[in-house]
Length: 81
Image 1 (cartoon, helix red, strand yellow):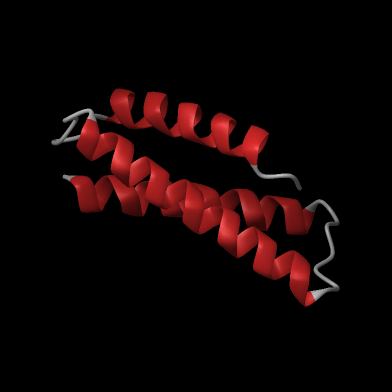
Image 2 (cartoon, one colour):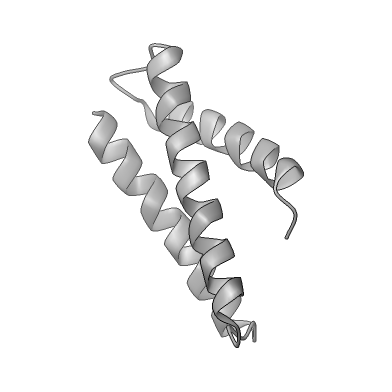
């Protein structure tokens, strides 16, 4: 269902953050951490809205991946890093 899909998306975003930390990204400033948390929340909210608006519930893994990639790419263009 939608909650399970959102949990899966959260885990994916968290794993990418851990990957960035393991690759040497340092969170030396609180503003960097705040920015990453805000972007994470924006992506998850946009994903939830898209899944509901497109009436993709119950969510399949294929539709989750498609919509997640679309949202992630659109947010990366809109929100400067």
